Length: 239
Ligand code: UDP
Image (tube, rainbow, N blue to C red; front, side, top):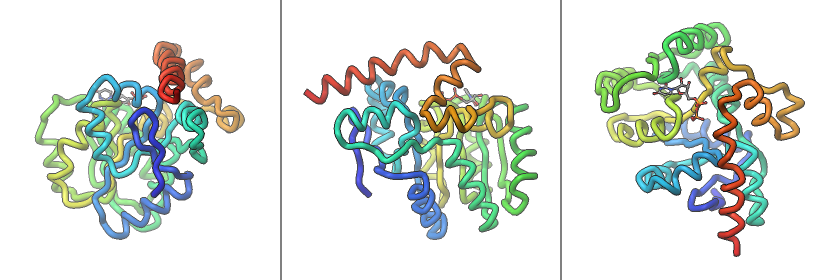
């Protein structure tokens, strides 16, 4: 697959549909796969944390999640086709899991959120198998959760611990597992639980989902401050 390197992070040159086809193929082959959905914050963070950058280099797929990544790819004149929002990918994969009767493990978010989300998943996708779930507030290195996942041997494992923790958890434990698609999904469980709302389609089409999210959770303003720095860094690198 063609890759586009943005500040050292190699993104898949892919659309929503192509990503889904690729992952569906891997599910059919039961091929262990590590997926990262990366936005500018993740890229900027990786530049400061070499261990995290090394982990990203081990991922099988890095998906462009966020308008900032698309903008970055245009600046370096290697435009990525479109934004592939992590939460959309989660929903589409759940649909596939429902159709193919696959098993799914959910790790992360607050206890109340994950319980609500699992209820929603059960009613929206009645044919998929819930291999297990656990909230995301446990100590690093907690082996009971690793054992739970190993025993369940799920086809898909969604990890919503926020970055960099979710990718670190996946990387540290990947060798233990036999199969599965492992994907860090940030705040997706909060959306699937309905505790955080997504932007209406109109906003998303205009690539303004970030603005809507900030309006909903003003504490996110601070996080947006990486965007100008990200763009500046890409421009400097281009010269
Ligand atoms: N979270 C968690 N354990 C932690 C810290 C965070 O399970 O130790 C969860 C949190 O409840 C939320 C998600 O991880 O559901 C992080 O969401 P956010 O939108 O902040 O994701 P990011 O953009 O940081 O990846």
